[in-house]
Image 1 (spheres, chains in turn brown, blue):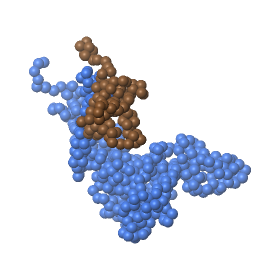
Image 2 (cartoon, helix red, strand yellow; image 1 turned 60 degrees about the vertical axis):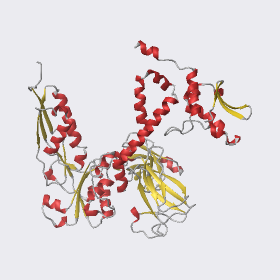
Image 3 (spheres, rainbow over the protein chains, first blue to last red; image 1 turned 180 degrees about the vertical axis):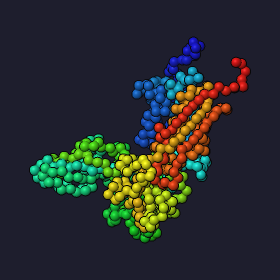
Image 4 (cartoon, helix red, strand yellow; image 1 turned 60 degrees about the horizontal axis):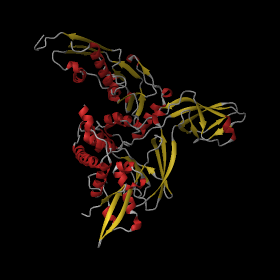
Length: 103
Length: 491
């Protein structure tokens, strides 16, 4: 019994980041019967004012409930230009940046 | 059929065995949850396929088969509104007139509508009849017309059931014709049907073939009546009030409940639908096929406590030949209000005279005449006949005799008691059936070396109006325990 209690751990910040990383790697509707996942790749090809980027920032706390525990400005989505012609799409959770993979 | 939630819950229930995963589940970690979800969805799809694959051609047991069968037979889940007679007292000094169609509210808050107009003198009383329902009108604009265009009837938000439908548009007033019989092309006709999920639709015709097919943009109004069915039970002398005052003299009128004439009926329940699914034929209720009046009355008055319908053949076997019996249908029935004549001695069976017929009996007669008005109809008083059943059981000493006795009593009374389906349909409790029922359901009688002795009292077979059932006081059960020599090791 005591062994069990030692094994049970408290969730920490890196757990949340792992979950968000998983979300960032999963395209939307990848799992059968669920709309879980991101559509960030589409953001690059849709006009700015269509609001798709804001929708994705709102979708993240719905798909990953742990993020909804964070303050509302914890989720940031921005673009980083890297020399000479590359652009990184970065999803930052409470300051921790996650680069959305291009694959 | 197991749903995705069932499978997901089964997975979640085992998470307690894996403490690492339990932590992740508490966080609703999507890495765990999405896997579980996807597997549950896969299994649910497979379960749906299995469900569709299992067909029940003869003995219909599963709920989904019963619903599909009811949809095929054209059974619409509709309620019959309760009808009550109200006493109207005019406390004022002037005579007053109340129109039919006034809306009232009873002491339970249910809406009623008066169906007769009445004149009441000053300081006098009068009677008025009212039905428990309310009407709502919905306008539907036709978009994308197609042959046999259908409009779904919405369910009421307050839990009331559908009771009536009246359809009209700017150009036509639509008439109800079951299954488009006797309908020319261009006749404004509508048909009501329900699907296997018990959603009710109003369906129109096909232009150029039968009926009228609405055009795009047509506005069709459906006036729907919603009723609370059997839940409308105002107490005797309970007060009713007008929904709104139309005339200053209305405030001098006092309305109280006098009598319930027709008890309201909820939409047909699963048990009755299961019963009706046993009838093999599917036929048009406008003409009764091969004399299935029993089916006709049972499907329309499914809340009757007892119904027996017989023809001149059975009548003459019971009471001898008579010219009066030619072309006559005989009925004995007991409605949920139990206001019909019921006697206990079958030698005193008698036909009920016209002035003693209750409203339920008159409605039953009208239903028969709507289907086939060449028949004359007579009503007999139902005769209560509690069947004597004596049961002796010998069980091993492992079981408590009092428990086994109670178990047998519950089983027999639920299958053949006064309110059972068997009693409603005059199914005789035979030795074979009782024996099979008790031995299959009582655990104590399944092990070897037990004994079950049954005697069923004599039932007069030639009396069609008897209401036979097993009553608690005519059911005698004795349970004895046997000391049996069980082959075992030890002492």
